[in-house]
Length: 75
Image (cartoon, rainbow, N blue to C red):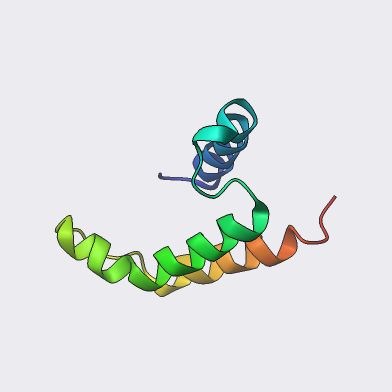
């Protein structure tokens, strides 16, 4: 992922996958998906550590948080 557009396209692919294969998603409801995302974010240091990768910078997390909040009311 190297750009905002890459992220937007990734999210659209996730949505499309959900619409086509929701029976294969562990967290197909918005409530479950958001809870799983929060749990993964909390566990991310371990995930990145196991992959021997560095976690993204704090500024990137702030941008993502703003995007999640804005989508509540954005048309």
